[in-house]
Amino acid sequence: MKNQLKLTFIYLFICLCHSAANGQSQLKHWYISPYEINVTSSSPAVIPMLGTPPPARQISNGIYDLNGDLLFYTTVDASQNYLEVYDRNNNLMGSVGLFYQGVTSEISIVPAYGNDGCSNNKYYIFTAGTSPVGSVGCTGSEGILNESIIDMNLNSGMGGIASNFVQVDAICGYENSGIAVGKLHGDQRYIYFSGTNSNIHGQIDKLILDASGNVSLSSSFATPTFANFQTQEMDLSPNGDYLAFANIHSSTLGAGYRYYIIGLDGNGNFINNSYQQFNLNDDPLNQQEEGGRGVEFYQSGSITKLFIGGGGLGIYSVDIPNVAIQVAVSGSANYGFSQLEMANNNYIYAGSSDDIGAIDPAPSFPVMVPGSNINTVATIIPGSLYPFYCLPDQIDGENYDNIIPAQVTFDVTSVG
Image (cartoon, rainbow, N blue to C red):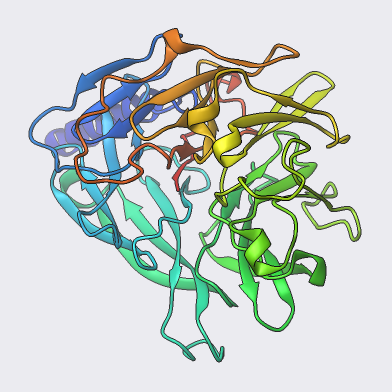
């Protein structure tokens, strides 16, 4: 009996310590195997990952604890068709996402509700991909949203895949899809998934992720105004009032607009006729705005801006709600094709073909800050056309720095 009591005490002690160590601020670490990027300072540190990690071709991300110790990370395999998950010792757990012809739509990692780092230590990975023609009742191709589960209690605490490739939504149409995950509403999160429906044009589904990890369709929003939009990045404003996305090659699809903003109510539902659609004032004919990604909200007090990627025109700051007020970000000409992401150090980052550039979003006339660029990893991904254009994502509406000590919260990240 004494031995049994002693073992029980040790287990609880370890569990409580592990739980306490997992409360953390968002996006302190990004990963581009074999390097780890610490973005907590104005001059991000790039350090080698331990051991022998696999080669990576795009920016990825992982889950880590308060001490900065890695739990697991994701990366795109050499063929760029699968998202792979590795444990902290660089052992492959398996593949959790299939992409269409190497197109990496957004990927979201979401902690299970009530994740305590002990008995409940699960994470949901959502990926956008494809399903065989006709498999979900579509006459052509279709975009699907898959859910996989990582359970860190498997394999003696090294983690493993508990469930894989569970289809939770499908939209008939093209395979480029965006994913945006919202902050907690009670014990639920809202997930927004985009796709092109050949019958009703552009479609965005609102889904509910409940406390048990189940996903259900809540509502859909579609309008012919969207035409056949394709996107690789969506973003929610920190206050949950707006959902934005960038359209890929909209001029060839007949939409005529590159950027869209949709109003949301207090329950995350679409407000009918609230959407705005616009192009850059500097390019009214929509000739240079390539992409389908490049949207990131910035909020400070009553000020809301949307940063957008304008292809060869660079990056612009757009006033919300007056989208006609647009300010070019000085020095951003090489970064306009990238996804955009706010990091822990309050800079917005954008990728070029050979580095990751930092933007100070606070000034009235935002500028690139060359001294804060992440450029020492530029030579580690040979053969990739756009190694730095797909950046991690996060839940912007949750302030992880102000979590009370009794509440355990984890990062939510994406790579697109």
